[in-house]
Amino acid sequence: MSLPAHELGHAGEDAALRYLLANGYELVHRNYRHRRAEVDLVVRRGQELLVLVEVKARSSARYGYPEEFVTERKRQLLRLAAEQLQEELQWTGDIRFDVIALAPVSNGLQLEHFEDAFW
Image 1 (tube, rainbow, N blue to C red):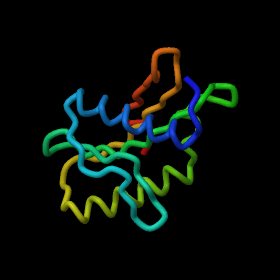
Image 2: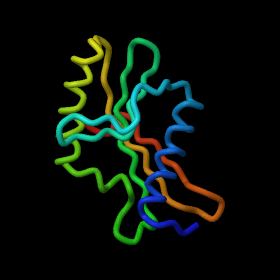
Image 3: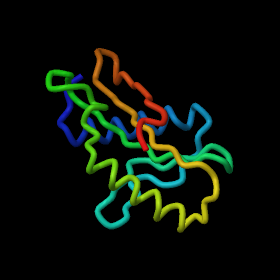
């Protein structure tokens, strides 16, 4: 399965969202933006857990695994977005940061979910 980078990224976000919805999460925002921060997916589980999800899709592991490409700068921006979301939503529950890593395989995309990937 060979896709251009932007198509792979979009397909990865779609697959990640389907996976999360199938596992009991509810979509709050897709591609949420605050200043320089963009969060691929914001989902929640009930009233107690808000999850900011960074989706990383790579065409191969030749230069590293997808989850390794969440830089410290990206983590800082996700934290900034979380603070803004907490205020906007008046969120009083827990907040978690997850990474969903995807890579093409012969029959689609292989997905790996890293819960509580960083703080």
